[in-house]
Amino acid sequence: MSNKHFCIPENNFPKIVVIGAGFAGINFIKKLKNKPVQVILIDQNNYHQFQPLLYQVAISGLEPDSVVTPIRKLFKSCVNLIYRMAKVEEIDTKNKRVHTDIGYINYDYLVIATGSSTNYYGSKNIEKNSIGLKNINDAINIRSWMLQNLELGVEGCNFEEKSALTKFVIVGGGPAGVEMAGALAEFKKYLLSNDYPEIENGAMKIYLIQSADRILPTMSKKASKHALKVLKNLEIEVLLNSRVTDYDGEIITLLTQNGGEIIRANNLIWAAGVKGNIIKGIDEKAILQGNRMKVNQYSQVEGLENVFAIGDIATMISDANPQGHPMVAQAAIQQGKTLANNILSKINSGDFKIPFNYVDKGSMATIGKKDAVADLKIFFLNGRIGWLLWSFIHLISITGFKNKFKVGLNWMLKYLSYEKANQLIIRKYKRDN
Ligand SMILES: Cc1cc2nc3c(=O)[nH]c(=O)nc-3n(C[C@H](O)[C@H](O)[C@H](O)COP(=O)(O)OP(=O)(O)OC[C@H]3O[C@@H](n4cnc5c(N)ncnc54)[C@H](O)[C@@H]3O)c2cc1C
Image (tube, rainbow, N blue to C red; front, side, top):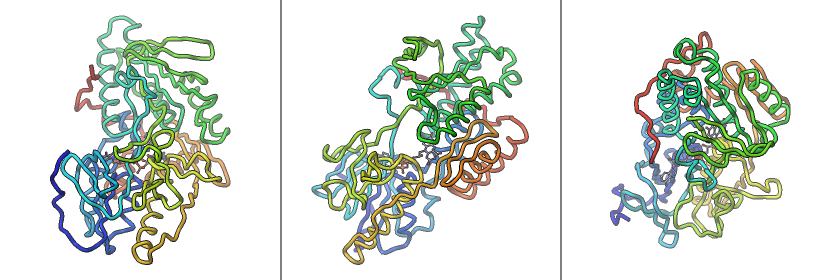
C-alpha cells in the first residue's frame, strides 16, 4: 500500500470522497456542483459507462466510445471536483482514510458507489472460459471473440466444427441476456449469409439458458410471454428451468428439466448475475447477500457514521422492500441525488432531512431491432411502440450530447438497413490460461 498522500489543493471545505463514477456516483456529484464542499472522485477507469447499451457494442452495432464518456469531460464545469484515476484497495474507517494504488486520501464523508461485477457463483471454469457482459472491456471482448470465431468458422472444414465455432450460448434470461440473444439472432438472420457466405445459416445456433421458469422474471408475465414468443420467432432455443454447471471452453454442461445435457460451443456469454464490488476494510456485519452493503434510509452504512453506500453496492432493506431495491440505473440515480441533498443538509443544519423513497418508473427490454416490452406504472407496451419508447428513453439517458448524436444517427441508419459498421477486430481476444 502506498504511503503517499494524494496531491490535491487543501481548503477548509468539508471533504467528500466518492468511489465510483457509475450512475450513482455521477448523479451524487452533479447535485454538489459548485457547492461549498470539496469532492474527490476516484475511479479505476477514466470514463463513465452506459451499461444498458453494452450489448450493442458486443454485437458490432455501436462503436465503444458511443457508450462511454470521459469523466473529465463530464465534470469540466464542476470547479469543486477533483478526479483521480485509481483503484481503491482499502478503507480505514477508524482514521477516515481511503487507500488506493496511487496513494491515500483522508475524508470527512465517504460515498461508496463501486457498483457490481459479474457473479460466476464460484465456478472458476466458467469464469475462465466464458465472457461476462458487465463493462466496456467485456463488450469489446465479445465482439472480437465472436468475429474471430466466425473467421475461423469460414476455414472450418466440417459442419460440426463450424457449428461449434458459431454457436452462441447466453446464460441468464434477464434483460441483458434477452437483449443480447435478440441482437445475435438478427445478426444471424440478416448479416451472416452476406458477410460470411462460407458459413451455412443452419450452422449458427443461439441458445438462451434461464434457471427460472420464465425469462425476464423481474418483469410482468405479459412481458415474459411476449419476449419468449419473439425470441422463438427469431429461432433462438430458449431453455427454461435449466442451469449451466460447467464449461471447459468447448463443452457446456447443463442441468435441464430432462436431466444432464451438453452443448458443444465456443462462445459462452455469462449474463446470469452480479455481486457487489466490496472493498477491504468494511465490517463483515455490514455485508449482506450478493456482497451488498447494508444501509439505512439515509444510505448510511450499518455501524458507520460518515460512510455511505449507493447504487448496486447498497441494499436498503425495509418492510416495503424486504429484498432491497433492484440493481438498476434508476435506483442508483435516485439514491445519488437524495444522498447529495442529505449530506448538504447535514453540513448546513446538522441533520439528514429526506429518507430515501424509490420511485419505480417501470422497466423495459428490447428484443431485436423493432420490438421491446415495457412495464410502465399504469400500462404495458410491446412491439414497435414499445421499441420506440425504449429507444427514446435510452437516447435521452446516454451521457453527453456527442454520444446521444452518434447513437441516434447510428440507430437511424441501422433502422433503414441491417448493416453493422463496427465489425472490427481491433484487439484480439485471448482466453486466460
Ligand atoms: C449489460 C447490462 C445492461 C443493463 N441494462 C439496464 C437497463 O436497461 N436499465 C437499468 O435501469 N439498468 C440496467 N443495468 C443495470 C445498471 O447498469 C446498474 O444498476 C448501474 O450501472 C448501477 O450503477 P452504480 O453507480 O451502482 O455502479 P456502476 O455503474 O457499475 O459504477 C461503478 C463504478 O465504480 C468503479 N469502481 C468499482 N470498484 C472500484 C474500485 N475498487 N476503485 C475505483 N473504482 C471502482 C467502476 O469502475 C465503475 O465506474 C444493466 C447492467 C448491465 C451490466
